[in-house]
Image (cartoon, rainbow, N blue to C red; front, side):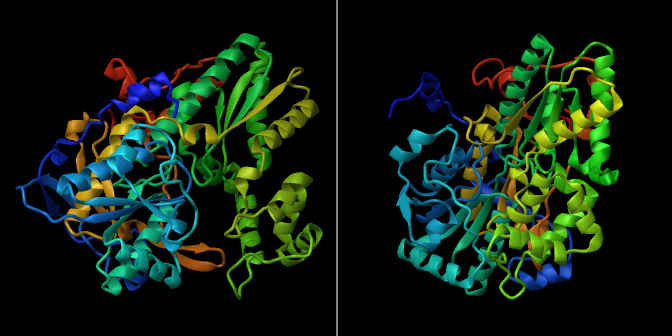
Length: 545
């Protein structure tokens, strides 16, 4: 395999590890925990893994330990740093006993069910240290939620002598990990299940989890691209760039990129919902800023748009909720099937409430069709397929033409998604992910199951990071999904009274009027710590660093 100069140099990078994990550890247990919501129901569903204490690792005494075989799964979309979680896990289990083995299940949870696996040896691991992507074993979106899947899984786990399974994924994947941990505990199968917090969207966070891995690298990657566009924008001075960013369920990426690049406009979905804004309100907000800049002779600018914006507009959110219900077969819980697209649209229009039908018919025809037709495998609207950036620019152009307020309004459109998912991890993510994986091995050695690996205090030097585990049930509540109530990890939305949003809100009017662009440039891996090792602006503001 031909490698770039950067790949060769990065292979030699040794990720930093918290001091607490640099020798023998002891698990210090906190008080019993409870779920963030629906405590009685979550306890009933997870009697064997509910109420466990938060764990913190502290220095302990060396003990001889038997070899342990561990399995690992990469689940869901890619996020920078996944390979370092696996390399940290590998080094961790080998430090427990050199005879320990690590097996990777191929292409996600489906590899466990289909018995598709490979042993991960040092030769393989060394090829992937500090690299982006999930290509060491691949990823997949198979959901582990059925008893027959769990039973197929235990067959291969027993065959390989695997005593613990580490699932690296987002909120849905870790919800599945918790369900699997509960099932194996109830059956007394003797297999532990540990989760690791992954998603570039940044919405898997809470009091215990400071950030999901990959968020740092993805935002730095997108911010470099936005900065490049803003430099071009300020050079040509003739285009408004509408830039859609990943983040269906929360606006963390858009907000972080705004903090890094200072665009003229950044929409935050959570604020749109909180203010009860209509689509027309959003269009007017953008048009007013475009017109104000035009009056100063500045017929150019940048607009950052979260991927899931349209789903947060209250009237459209209500519509989508009913669409998800009516397009799900109540008998099977699966998406309904129709003879044709026209038949599906006709069914929708006759099945939804009058006010929702009025909202649907008020939308541009292509957007209305997408809402009615495009579904993911779980029956949900595929919001990422709706070209919100083009919809908004089109509607803004129409609004400006009606009011004659901006004689020049030319647009360019961008969607940054895949560009950030497999980037080579920043030093922060390389260190954080390696620590998460190594820490997972210590949770396994401590006999824990139904836990998520956590590393905290990450705005401090890595030696001062705090390592431990949080019961996955602590993060759960009951939500309506595809026509049924299900236990899920609660997504973390942008907090409008939080320090990152407050900082943004205090400066956005200035950024809207002035051309205050910041050009972050590419991720730096070598050089002074203030250039190479900084965490996200979000994390710095949250921790007042």
